[in-house]
Image (cartoon, rainbow, N blue to C red; front, side, top):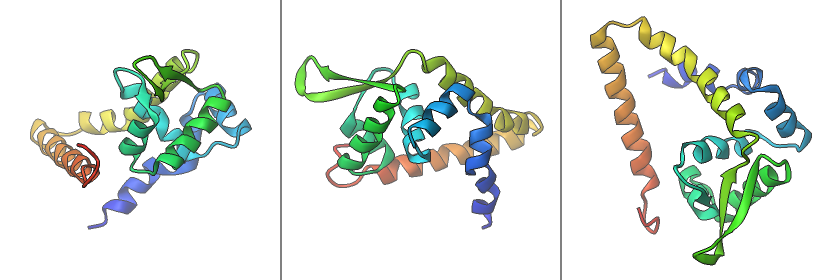
Length: 152
């Protein structure tokens, strides 16, 4: 189908790093954080409330120890905060550190600009077809995350 080569520039590390706000990039670099750590951040930004470590593991489709390691690195860098869940002290709630929230929001906007420009150049029918394809893709991704034992 040739789709992977088309999407590759969007996910390439250098492209992502160039668009990342300097302060966020410096925090990531100085603490040895990788794109895997960075994958946690949009999940926290999109969530309406703090996420549990197990919720992050589920969203990223990684093991609980891996999610815990990723969150730990981000917390050491000061990019996220961890707090005990008042309703269940065994759970840890993870949030974006407020100092980093506006940086991440601007980064997400910058990452979305090429897509918005591309959509603007399409006819209404083409935009509808593209959007329908994206919706189908999201349904498939979400469906693949709902496996046995996920509780989804």
